[in-house]
Length: 217
Picture 1: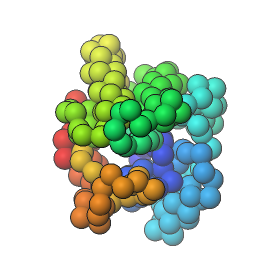
Picture 2: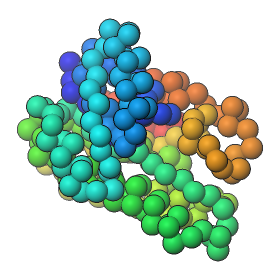
Picture 3: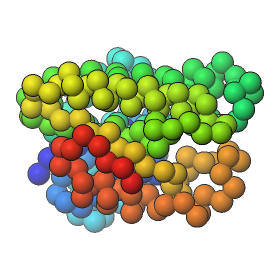
Picture 4: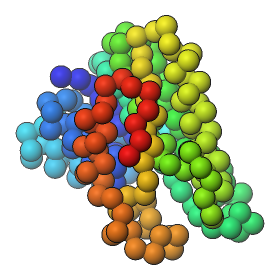
């Protein structure tokens, strides 16, 4: 049994990953900013006989990230799942749009990793960075989102080299769009219901989570 922290665990893929890992007798720490959503996931996990705890955390704040990790007696796996996408022609993106995406997708991953590494080095644990295929190739009306995901990819690949002589493994996860609340309020995808189900993606990630450097779905 492992202790697993998942950011952005209140909805979408984060919630699906939490349920998938919890179903295999792992203890799950649900991290996010919205307590109500996290409590719903916690209840659903416990109704299935699993174990989960809610930890409020803003990944864009290094102090919040550090405090969240300090509440855990041990940590075996960190899943950096929290992400934000704002889409449209680059000239229509506001400074706030740009800052929010870079802070969440890039800085959030870095801050959480910095806070988790001392624990993971002790446990010989793993980091999974949920990047998406936006970190592999550019896409129309996703310029800054892709830029943030390319940065996340670069951070992940560099971290793999940096930690090569430690017991910590780092995995980059690349998957396409899913039918999740990620698209709420956006017209970028006309029919999200045609996209992959997050529960299916979560199961694939779980089944391939063996310390490999890359998972592509």
